[in-house]
Length: 341
Ligand code: ADP
Ligand code: MG
Image 1 (cartoon, rainbow, N blue to C red):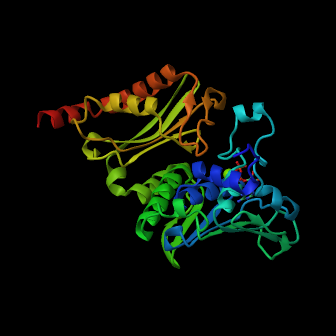
Image 2: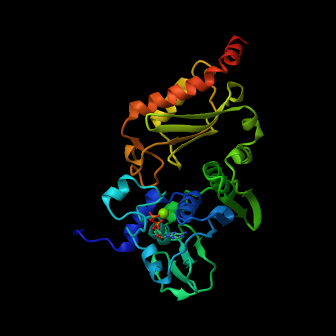
Image 3: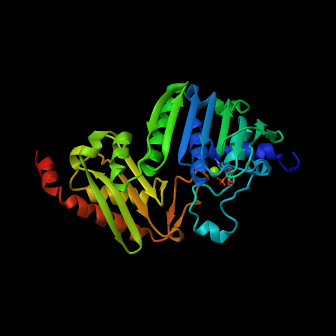
């Protein structure tokens, strides 16, 4: 075959392979866009586990009609404009890839009204074929509808699981978000029935209520609050007491500058801090937020941004380990009991 330039739709479908795995990844990208737009309330409607429909409505800043085609264009973003911006990016998105990728593997529509504008507009994309924006009534904010995910990519569609399983992935992702953004009201409906409703929590002291809603009171009854800052780093949140340990690592939530991440350095530091208060094979439960200078952490490691790279890995490890070790010291008496038992 001669070398040839791939058409845009195919390029987007290839990129979708990295960003869109299942309905939960669509929900993640769309809700993150809503939050980046300053939404205080986000409604998520799913049909058939999100395979048939994912609809996300927000009350954020919206998009002016003439920008709708840009929103679904590849590498088009309102969040960064230079490499310097990328180095201290404060939004969840910045790659300008999610909407074109999702739109290339679904029947897609975006409707919006920009703040302060008199009317809204809607743009439809069918498996990558882009329509023209048309006037459309819409309150301030944005609605994105994604129907029939992977209808045109059978190889991907066959990896989708049963409705319940896909719904479970969405609920788990939403739980992780609910912990990080107690200020935002989040509603999830499935097949027309409300399945989750996280009400907004405004006062800092009420945050534990959101944690209880997300993880259950079993966790909040047996946790310690952590709050420590040093050397330009701040760690805060809640760590489960040894008595709240679990047989799997299913209640471990770690955020770096508000972004949920999985990181080996972090996981190792936490494990080490718990080493002498937990039985072998038991896993701690925790919800921890690390805040640091955005220039000290690279979030552009993978398109889905689950991973980060710390510039000063050793320092971060040491800080987390010491903070948690000190917090858990007060429980060590109880921990020792557990070990003797
Ligand atoms: P990114 O989030 O990396 O910028 P996306 O493809 O997810 O890329 O979105 C492209 C652009 O569309 C965003 O930069 C933003 O300007 C606009 N946009 C997308 N979703 C929303 C939304 N819910 N509210 C307001 N603007 C949005
Ligand atoms: Mg985005």
